Image (cartoon, rainbow, N blue to C red; front, side, top):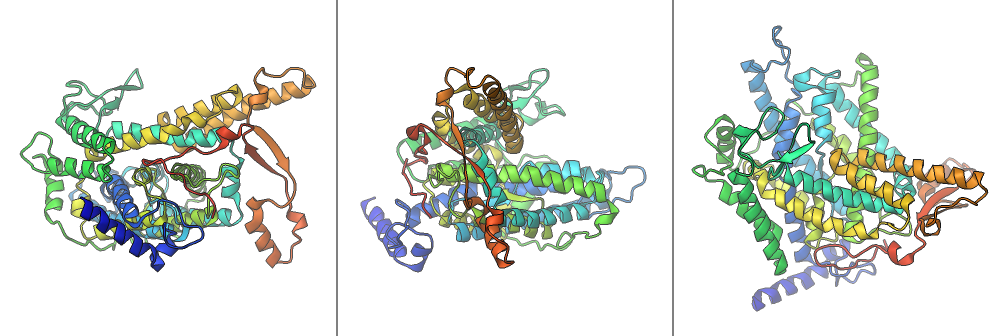
Length: 573
């Protein structure tokens, strides 16, 4: 091991001195803003971990978007869904394979672009939740919704360019800085719980919990044949072999490896569980002897293969006048859900990586980050895909020590390679990554101690945010719930304070997070002022008063150290 460690150390030093090291600001690169403890081998390992954690999106996204019908046309007058139409189902199979290629391609493109431009360890891909909304509510099952598939793609394309405009004008940065500190911390913790819930449930986890009635959740872990039409276990709970394979090899083995500081712990857990699940003769195989299992196995056997994108490439319909009101509704919904979802995710990942600036409530290169995300959304629509967003599974790579954009580039290159090895990467079972998501959630929950629990006006909104993100299954809705709660509680206290002329104050009012207004040119609107200057508009006319939040207690305002190795990284850009 000593020889191997020395070899890795020499490689890290050699690469750090190259242009690659300077671009990504690796330790030892000589860059004045080099990131401490950022090494080439660590970044590569972190990128691989992120990829294996989110590789499920290749197949899952294709399965979900296929249900929209894509560009397939149903001509059956007796069944508007064409569910049993042979020709239509053949077309859907072709669409699904094109979607697999498209998902891998846009994930690779977006992640590499994001890593190069922002130097952040965050990977991008078509977002879960947004793809379901696109497929089942906007387009509808097999095209039975209010908007045709082609027009929905146009809504996604337009959304991306609106995002770019909002980012250049500083509106997305303003949104992050406007949020109270405790809400931002709570959103990061809520995302951790959200990840844990995904890892615990079907279809992207180990299936230990399910939906239920009248209780909202119930113990799961039953074999697939015991799941009813609503995904609830009707019997044999906790007897699914895949659950225990995931818990033992994907969970306990990974935890033990992490306890002994094995740097590839998460990758080993995912790969070990996947390989064990591939033989067809076991009770926990990913390729059972049924129609679905045979379809998976037939695709898996091809190993290497490239399926070109033809039917869904540039399939956008630019005639918005055919469904104007439905188009506007879909565009607005994509906008507000995606802007809150992605903005909260990016800030949370930056905080988890230790590069967020608590004083400014922002992170380095935020404008470039938001613009890159927005551009990827529009490019993805040209490949027939739902909106692209920052993936919360990026936390797995950060937990492995990823600190720079080299982590995201590595993940992106893996996605590009997977275009040609899609059968392999699409065959990583959900129970192989479920426990990894739970462990990431555990790590992200460390930040909960930084919430201002001393004052009820900060604690309750933060707690509401923390709860609503996993239980509403939406980062955006959780943040909205927390904001509304914050406005109602603190707005009411503000009115009482004003009416009573500061005589009626809560007992712990002095422990609240202070808000203040500062005049002058805001950093938030610097991009806007630059554009305005081009058109000879007076900067004075655009000066505004901005609201910023900061902690009275400097100790609690300092962002905690994050990541598997608990290393502090400078947030200066």
